[in-house]
Structures are given as C-alpha cells and as structure tokens.
Image 1 (cartoon, rainbow, N blue to C red):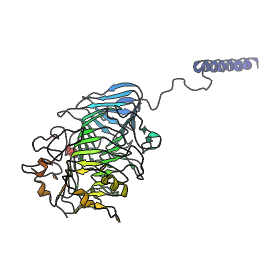
Image 2: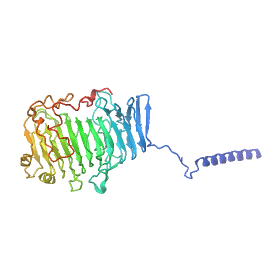
Image 3: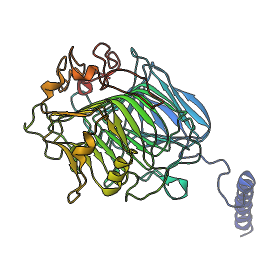
Image 4: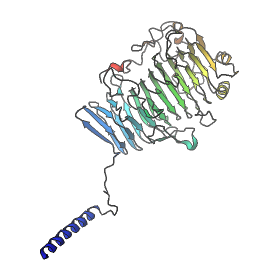
Length: 463
C-alpha cells in the first residue's frame, strides 16, 4: 500500500512540475501563444510542382521586390498596406488563381511600382492552360487612394467583401506606377453580382502614374474609376465583357490616347457600353462631380458592318447618366447600336451649361447616332451639331478611311489612312493637361504605340 502511495505521489508531483513548467513558458494568463503565426502574413512560397511562386497574405510594411526570372501566382486577396511597397520589374509574369479568386489590392498609403518596357511588359494573366483561358479566371488589380470622392464622409468601401476603403482629402496622392502593364482574363465575381474589374481605381490621386496599360478579356469593366484625380495615357480595353471605361463617384482625371476593341458575340447581360459615366448611383448633386475628360479615344464597338449579327446586349458607345459631367474630345466612336446617349435631365443640364462636352468627335456606323432618355424633349441633335463644337456623324466605317481593319480581333489595325478625317480636326483651345496634337482618335497614322508590348491574342500565348 505504501509503495502504491509513493508511486501515486511521484506521478502527481511529476504532473504538477510539468504543468508549472508549461505555465512559466507561456506566462500570459490567457494560455495562448504570445507570438502566434499571423495567418494573413505576406509570404512568397515556391511550389515545386507548378514551378510557380505563390504570393499570399498582407504586406503591412517595407518593400518586396519580385524577380523577373520567376513566375508568380496570386492566391486569395493579396494586400499591400499603408507604408508598404510592391516592386515588380520589367518582364515579370504574375498569374491569378481561380479557386481562391486571386486579387492584388493596393490599400490607401500602399504603393505598386510596376514599370515594364515596350520590349518587356509586366503581365498579369490567367493560370489556365493556353487555349482554355477566358474572362473571370481570377480577380484583377485594385488600387485604393486618398484623393477626393463624392461619397458621404469622403470615403467608401469597395464591394466584394475584401474590406478595403478608398477616398480622402489628398488630390495629389501617389499610389505608385503602372507602366507597360497587361492585365488579362480578370473580372471574377467575388460575391454574387459583385464582379471585380480588370483595373479598379478608387480615390486614386494625381501623383500616381498610369501609362501604357492593356486590360483584356475582363469579366466586368476593363477600367473603372471610383472618384479620384489620377490621369492616364495609352490605355487599351480589349474584348471586355461589360464596359470599357467606367467613371463615377466624382472622378475628375484626364485620359488621353485610349482605344477599345470588342468581340461582337460577347457582351454582358447588364448591357455593354464603351463609356459609362455616373456622378453617383442615384444621380445626386454630390461633389466633387464626375467631370473626367477623355481626349483622343478610338472606340470600336461590335458593328464592323451596320446591321450584322451581334450580341443583343451591346448598347451604347457613350452612355452618360445620373448627373455626370464627363467630356469626350477629339475622338471617334464607331460601330455601336447607339452612338451617344445622354440619359437623364441633370446630365442634359450639364451639357447645356457646357460642363459636359462632346467636341471634335466623329460618330460612325451607329444605328442610332444620338439618343436621350425616353420621354425627354431635349434636342440632342441641335446641341451635338452646334457650330464650333466640331462634331460629325458618318454612316459607315468606310467613311473613316482606316489603313487596315480596326475590327480584326487578333490583328487589329487602328491607324487612319491618308485622307482620313481623323488626321485633322482636333482642338485643345482652353484645355490644360493634354498633348496638343492635331489628329482625332488615339493614333496619328504613323506611330503605333501598341507595338511590342500589347497582345491581341493572349488566349494562345505561352506564359
């Protein structure tokens, strides 16, 4: 019995000693690890099976520089936080994961420094095999800045469930640089009916540089600006499903040299437009008012030949509504069922007050060149054809006198030929922030700024 008692007390003492040791090791009263592994910590992990370096988590501080010699895979929401910088060298290829809805998000105060070259662009693309890629294969790129927007409190949260806010009081905020960058096959639905765009910008400031960026096969819009002041040049929207260029929430930047090309058989069920512009979702008088100015845009819709068979969800080349004061200058809008639709009384008033301007612009090959909201009595024809506005309407694409086929899906030629009305007629009187060129549309008939870095057949490219 005594031996049994001794053995019992021995094991009891051993258990108490082990417990005391364990308590001393933690010494935190709560019984949890004082240095837990952060499940959202930023990481780049090599996957020997796929030969991809998987990027996950949130970069909260410091700078991470990728390597062009490696290929990467975005998994889940990858966030670059306030004070952190992601640097991407020329020639880098980054794929997006479908299953985890891979998305790159630059938060307010964070930066992306992605500077490719014409010979070595940076490519964000699908992880699907060649020939199997399509819209909505992954998320896209989201940039949140601190520039003004017109929402209550001066800030808003992106839809999609990734809990990132945008907007502020710094019009010259700098979120970094995107130059010679392609974004392909993005636009996945993060939540039901909440798709992401190829490139989404919310409150992005004028200190940010956006130049030579192509968005291809987006499952939603190619480019969307939610407020902000950022300017951009040399944009390509290629075979987008929804809208090519979407602006709202008080966006007031300036865009010069942009081109869009559409697949005539693929449009979005919500209705696909070249431009869509709102002041806000309900058309209030919230300030700053959406007043973006686009100049030198070549917008080619689904109609290579007027009346040909197209997806019935294609709608309008330029759809301005909900109190927007967007302007389109020195441009061409071709091949849409409706060329220009000014779709509410407040936007009509903005046009009458010369806050909304359409000038030195040609509408071509549209079934209905000009339209207003059903029931409106505003005379858009008289306004559009005002002496001094320099606008015109032509009935066929042939009247534009193009050097090649701008509707050739894998080999488009957007250059005007000698004698084309696009080679003259531009005006920048009273304007600042634009190159004062003489031609209309995005191309001068000589220099193809898409050459080398753009890709009009990414479906069949080896990545």
